[in-house]
Image (cartoon, rainbow, N blue to C red; front, top):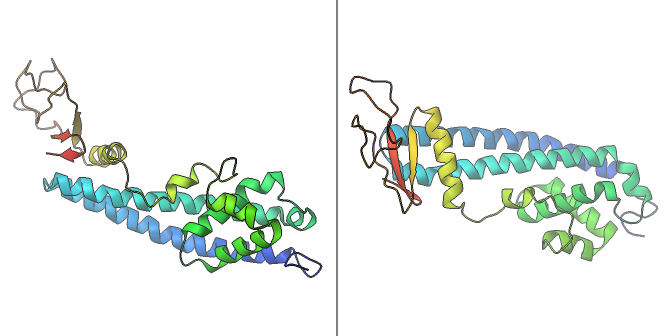
Length: 226
């Protein structure tokens, strides 16, 4: 008999899921700290006028936030395994109510390095439901049950310029800096007190020379800040 034969105990899945939850808690804290530090770095770079470096550094902010988000999903799925462990034992096929959780954990295990409990859960589910079931999740085949939101969170690809600019705008706003995105038909430059200038961010908006509360405006050209 296989792992889920007569000798299998439902508590095995629950035990591994609980251990995984404990490890996830530690990992989440680590990556949250890294994310906060990276955001602080971006903020400092913007204040120092090192705008191109800030745009590069924001890649790390997004990567760390994605990791935190993925871990939160995995934590939720582990709790569901504990709650539904009896169904895993009694049903020969993957229960519909657990398809997303199990498929997503298998997928996460294939993208994660050092995570013994997660890898052992993957082995258990592969033994229970077959290599084809596991391969469908790992390879993201059509009609697989992996949570779509988890896929980009664990992607190794570089973040697109649009998402990096969006994140940079969010961080800049927290710093009191306004970033204006330049397209092919409009020219955006640093804010000046001149009215009706062709290069003003907000056309027709008057700015007094004595107004010291106006946030600095930084020009973005495509995926690069100047």
